[in-house]
Length: 120
Image (cartoon, rainbow, N blue to C red; front, side):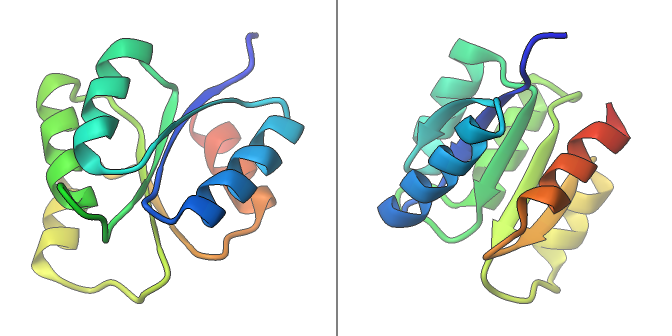
């Protein structure tokens, strides 16, 4: 099986670089984007296996990008990453639209690995 391809979306450059490094070390193929708009373009271009999407970003937030990607590809596996506790209507709507999971930052790579391997 080829290495899972992950689209990592976050406007925090330090987090993006550190997480990209960790994921590559775990043999994931990593594509990065810094906002929701970029994430949509890269999703179409690279068809990643999993998307790790920050929620609070400039230009387009994670929720808007989630719904746009899901509209184009209902089977997209998108995991929200957030430093904040989430409990709102948008999150509930995303869950009912097939949200793949939620990781609270800073997350542990084993959490991500378990999520990817258990749902494939």
